[in-house]
Image 1: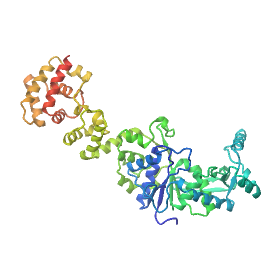
Image 2: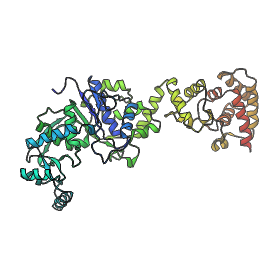
Image 3: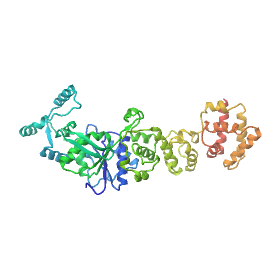
Image 4: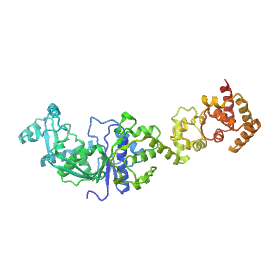
Length: 486
């Protein structure tokens, strides 16, 4: 047994931002670990120096922590099995690669890029199903190898895959998986720059870090036979494998940046709540066996099992994410939304930014059922923050008649007589004016809304003017009369 309790890892390459597919992999590892009282580890696979992006590690860590995926061991917090950056573990890989060579499971390859390119072209002409190395350097004599090493000729270390073997393993999600070793290349394990490839580094690290379950994307399924061989060659106990289904666009193509945002940071910048994004990503390939779709993190931890992950690709449905964002926002208390709204206001172009908390809480309460994002408190109800400069033309055409200015002036005069009015006072005042004018209340309510908000929709009319206050409401009525009539 590798360990008494589960140990899983998320091992991204620092090549940019955190892809939502990477978030799902991290989330499933996290949920599995927490559900089973295990450990969740962050390891950075930064051995491909050509793809390394400055600042990417910090971006990854910030995105994981924003989503609430707190790891138990990692590059910034340490742990008993560090270091957690592969570029700081090169001696481990060199040692184990040398061990493979001594056992005959690995060998030095001195082939030039030109020879490898020629080999690939020849195999393509022969229409072989895949390009593979031809084991040329495996047959070099011991003396030839030693001379090449002494002469400093550029080299790599390759895996020595025996032909005509069946490589079999059980996948938690996919069941029994079988590969033919004739289709497995003599993979490079150590590159000419001394850095390991993914295949050697991840097997060595998973063993040394006592990883019990490898939960990763389906794209790594074809690499797994190479990893199985390495475990066998080292005589190490293998972890359990679980390969997650692909993420798909609505047209069933693989999710990619060409068809929209794929980075966690993109969704954060657009105002999605972390709770909604985590809830949504959890459902991309997993369900608890019921119809429930709304989850908090603690509920996901309680329900999650790898056995409930589907094999089929999961469609990334933006409408569902938007719905979940609205649901999570509505479940938050007004006090929880307040600091987020204040931050939106500070980052906006509003001239007045120091609104009282009491005022903002009234806006939150009035608009809560009408918004899906916090930034929509500004975009859907700008009239709470600035008096309207323009008025909805369709509403003017429908609701603003020749007699409207006089009616609104009479309504403003009625409001003037109110002392510290509450909602019912405004309702009664408007009802009295409507009765006096012998018109339906709608003849006053619709133009009144237009005058104070510039729009034809919004929260209840009397809720709106209670929040704005008597003086501001009267001021806006008079300005609207002047502007719309001219």
